[in-house]
Image 1 (cartoon, helix red, strand yellow):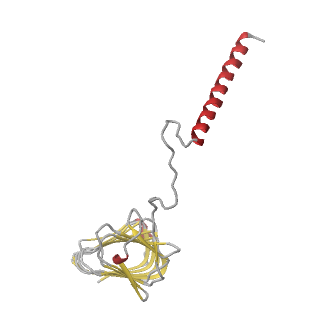
Image 2: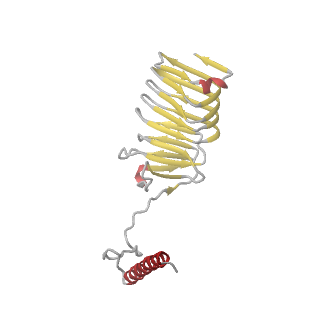
Image 3: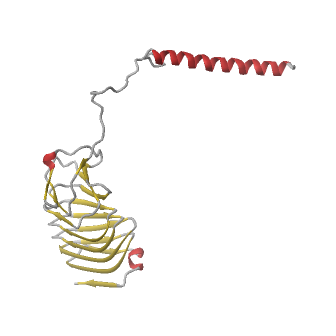
Length: 228
């Protein structure tokens, strides 16, 4: 056998020996409850305070009344509520259910996420609220707001959509979606911006609008437009 081949086999043997030796040492440490760096292994035990994201399950509802800023309403197969972003459990004094209505009560201003199968009516019960409505697919939806409200919608599939708001309201759509009929009624200085959605029948009623925009996607399916 050539010397070069012997050296190669010898080198491979050394590498395999070192790998096996390190595995044996690590396993010995593990059995003793020690990491490879000498620190003690820690495993969660029953009763330990381990942080786990939680969502509160809700009873079915048909309407949402909002008294808190930064609320996101999203489609899901289960009705739930959580903090916006962290999706941790919401204190029970931040919401209540009365009949078929979910009330979002004033909180700390950190925002709330609501997940639901469907909702037919959303009411913004205070001025200057921002609400996101995401990925709902249903026959109809009515939203009402007071002054200085901002409603942002993403990925909706709604056959009949109605929005009634006060002054300085803004209605914005983004991401692909579809509305068969959209009826928007605003007070003074409102704005409507439809991006990336198709609309067949669109009517808007407003005084001294700040903006009214439909992009090419919105215009592509438009069969009727009415402005009062």
